[in-house]
Amino acid sequence: MPPRSTAQRRLLKEYQQLARDPPPGIVAGPLDEDNLFVWECYLEGPTDTPYENGVFPATMTFPKDYPLAPPTLKFTPALLHPNIYKDGTVCISILHSPGDDPNQYERPEERWSPVQSIEKILLSVVSMLAEPNCESGANIDACKLWRDDREGYDQQIRGYVRKAMGL
Amino acid sequence: MDNSTVTFILTLVVAFIFLRWFISPDLPQQSVKKGAVKAKKAKRTKAVNEEGVEEESSDEEFDIHSPMNNVKARAVSSSMIEVVQTLAPQLTEAQIRWDLENNGGSVSLTVDKFMETGSLPFPPDTAPQAATASRSGDEVAGDGANVAKRSGLEKAKSEELTPSTTGWSDDKQERSKLLQKKREEMVDKARKRLAAQLDGA
Image 1 (cartoon, chains in turn green, cyan):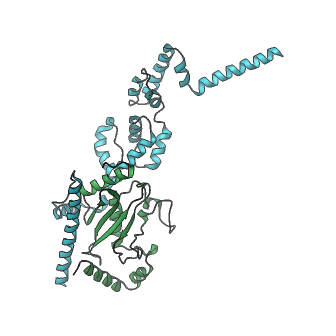
Image 2 (tube, chains in turn yellow, brown):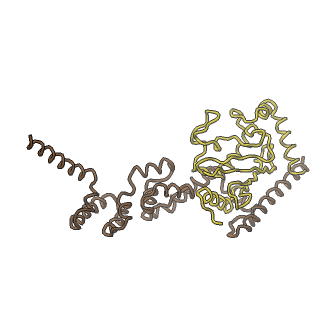
C-alpha cells in the first residue's frame, strides 16, 4: 500500500535515510511498516558514561500531523535518568513544539520544527544520556541522586545495564 | 439642475472606468480585441524580461488561452515566497520561486513538498552552485546535528561495524528483516563488549 499522507511519505523518507546512512549507535525504524506512526528505536549508551555498553529500546510515536507536531519518545522499559519521566517518556527541548513550553526557558531554535528530524532527535537523546540537564528535571529522584550521590547513581545504572543485557 | 446631474453621473462613470483600469489591468485584456491584447502582452513580456529569465517560459503561454495562464500570470509574488520562507527559513528565495513556478503558484503544494522531503530542488540555471548547495541543504534538513558530531573516523567505524546491514531494500519484508538483524547485531555487540569489560574488571 503506497503511503498517502504527507506525514507517511515523510516518515518513509526518513526511514530510508536512516537505513542508508545510519548514525553510529542508533537503529530505528517502524515497528510494522503498515503503521509508519509507531517506531522502535534502539539506542546504544554513550561511551564513558554509566550507560556504556547498554542498548536501550524506546518507542517513538508520531502524531498524524507530523512533521508539524513533534513525536513522543518513551523508553521501554523506563530508564533511570534526570530527564526521563518515571514512565519512560523523554523530556527534552527538541521534542517540544515551539508553542508548548512547559518549563519556560527553552529557546525556540532548540525546539521542534519541521526542519528537525528523527535522526536529530535520537542524537539529542544520546547526548542527553551522556549529559543530564537537572535544571529541567523530569525525574526529581534521579536528579537528586545524580547531583548528590554520583557514585550511587552510576552504580545503579551500571547494575541496570548488566541486568538488561542479561549478564 | 438637469445638467449638473448628468455631469455628475458622467464623472462617476468615467471615474469608475478609470479606477477599474488602474486597479485590475488584467481584466480589460480579456474583453478587448486581440490586437490590444498583443500590445499589452508585448509590454508585459518586456517588463518581465527585465526581472528575470525564468519568467520567459510563462510568456509563451500567454498566447494560448488555457486556464493555466491566469495562474501563471499571477504566480509567485513576494508575499507567497515570504509565506513559505516563514515555514522554512533555510530555503533560498530561488528554490521557493522555482518550485512555486513549477507547480503553478500553489503555496500549499510547495509547503507539502517541503514537509515531505525536508528541502526543495534548486533551479537549473544555478546548476554549478546547486550541486554543492543542495547537498548542504539536505544536511540542514536531514542530519545537521549529525554533521558536527560525526567525524569521518566515526563514520568509517560505523560502516566497518555494520557492513552487511546498511542500505535499503525495495521489498517491505526484506526491510523489516534487515532492521531486525540490525537490532540483534547491535545488542549482540554491546553484550560482548560488556562481557569483556566485566571480565577485565
